[in-house]
Length: 368
Length: 64
Image (cartoon, rainbow over all chains, first blue to last red; front, side, top):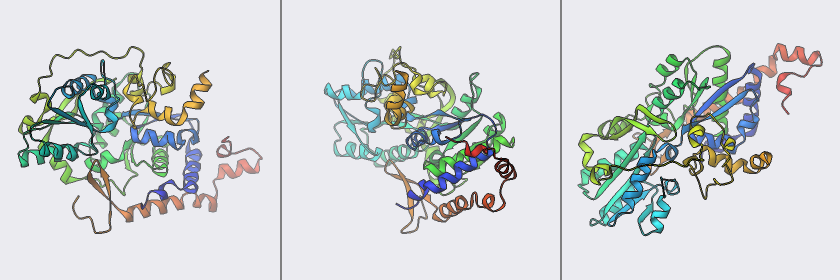
């Protein structure tokens, strides 16, 4: 693959680190919003290579982590019904609902299938017209166009037995919510590169202005992250708060206009509850009126679900950047990726899973 | 994603190409990284040089 190894070059990483050390004169707290970036930071040990005065706070950009418990419980209820084929990305299967998860529903006889694309689910629906195929459509602006396109295709092809259980979330309102929080320590953001590759960068200057924070759009490789951090620190040290694009090879300022047009057609903005955080106004997408017939919540009656979170799990605080994963007493003990108490331990984008995968020996040992 | 040339690279996510990878831009970014620190090597940073001359370890050397 081209331009992947190059962006992990150790010599260039050393230069970027030298620059960061040279310009840093005081303590700064930066948040990487995206869970993919959290994993990359921890995996490559970038947080440990940075000067101690730079604190990386891990953000809420893990789609399965913030999918509200109520929606997970609805998914479990729909998936358990006879005649339903419930399709999802794999990382959703172990996410705990109030009393079960999709794996257990599958174990009890529910037809739960892991797919790699919503198009796979649409294909299943066309192959098996007598069964109701439901796709669990979660994720940020990066994933939403694929789901929008799939629903659009379903409508165009007249596939009546396909529906989407939608819980899409949006990054800019989450940044605003983080900055509005009284306990907020964040002074600068690394914005999620692939979200911006779809949406472009126009939504961010008003946020940088209103909250006086630098926002640097970055990618996922070590050099991308280091360059994002370097630029954010440079801005902070010189008292600036601007939006910069450090991921130009993938993020044009306008994003992907075709994808944005599709999103506009299929979805509408709605208030959304974020697991562990609470309701953020106008922070999600649901299917628009024109596509309501493909809305699984509309098709299946799943109202009146009572939810119950684990009393031990502190994933809400992890998601808000208030604590690091290992500061939770359950981390690595009762709570592991095989038996997760919270969604942050499940996903390949969850902060707890990243710390467990790459740091558990040092963290659990040092805690004694 | 329209207008991707044959042989071009794209970012694929859940079965969809979401963006074209601009090779020229990738090359430029890497070139910028290559040049980072070169100016400093040539002209030196006054504080670091002074610190070195005084036998005090400069901040960026105190990294262990």
